[in-house]
Structure formats: C-alpha cells, structure tokens
Length: 192
Ligand code: ADP
Image (cartoon, rainbow, N blue to C red; front, top):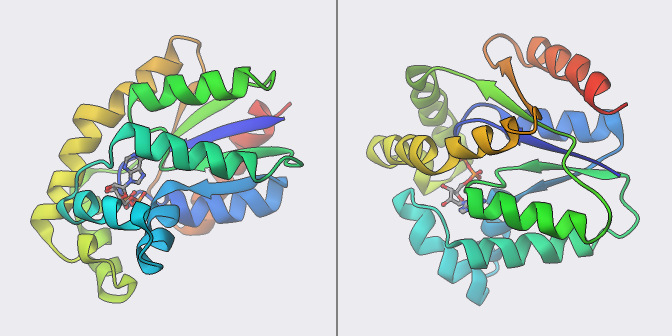
C-alpha cells in the first residue's frame, strides 16, 4: 500500500490536486475538511462539535479528528493506498497516523508540501469564498487565523517526516495543470 500526505497551507490547492492525483494514481483521497463539512451538513454530533472550531479557524481537537480518520481508512479495506489531504495537521495526528498504518504493516511513503506565499493564499481563499459557501472562507481575520495555526501547529509535521527524509516541497504557483505536472513527476518517484 502506498500512502502520501499532501501538505501545505489552507488554500494552497491540496484539494484540487488531490482529486486529480487520486484518479491518476488509483489512490483513495481522504480530506478531513470535507469529512467535517459532510458531518456538519448532516447535523451529526461530530459535525456540531467540529463547527465551533472551524468557524473560528481553529483546529478540531486531535482525538475527534483521529477517530474520524481511522474510521474512514477502515472503510476502505481494499485500497491500494491513500492521499491524505488536510491530515495530519499536528504532530500528535502524525504519530497516530504512523501507528495506525504500522499496525497494518504499512507506512507513509512521502509528505509533499505545496509552497504558496501568504498573500496569494489570502487572495485565493477570498475568491473561493464567493462560491464555496464556506463561512471560514469569507472572513479575512479567520483566514489569517488559519494561516497562523498552520505555521504554529501544522508546519512541525513537515519537520517530523523530514527526520526520515520523507518530506518534499513543490512550488504551488502556476496553472492547475502545471502544478499537477510537477506533483505527478514526484509521485512517480516516491511511489516506486
Ligand atoms: P483549508 O485547508 O482551506 O483550511 P480544510 O477543508 O482542509 O480547508 O479545513 C477546514 C477546517 O477544518 C480547518 O480550519 C479545521 O478547523 C478543520 N480541520 C480540517 N482538518 C483538520 C485536522 N486534521 N485537524 C483538525 N482540524 C481540522
């Protein structure tokens, strides 16, 4: 089984690229943000819990997120592998993911970070907010909070996987196809 973490700040294009990469490489795409939004839409207890954090640009607590992610992975016993998008977002989540995969005899092959400057991120998310219907995309202070949270709580996950030389960075600027081309090339290298 091959497992890739697609990493990068909010609005860096992880979701867009993960859908294309999952299709091209036969992997299952799991986005924790999408899972939380699905739970919210259906007003489940999990969704209601997550809502309060998401609206403020904060992370949903690890135990909630890790439990949801484990259930999702378990629901795909036949998968060739996974692209994790928006997870892990803390070192505790990364350790939980490694343990869960190790228990199945698997591991993370690579973490690939999309590099996009802060000002471009704010512009992209505000633009997305016009059509996404996401309250967290419409408020610049919430967007800046998400960027701060990324830097303080999520960026350390890059260094965590870098200790095993598994972390890579790809330029996340340019057209969707250009970025997809760069990512595909790296996927071919790390999936062998
Ligand atoms: P973006 O990458 O644009 O911020 P996401 O859809 O990945 O969008 O995440 C939206 C929100 O969902 C986050 O701001 C956070 O509140 C919550 N969330 C998503 N994934 C996680 C996670 N792994 N851990 C904690 N909270 C998460």
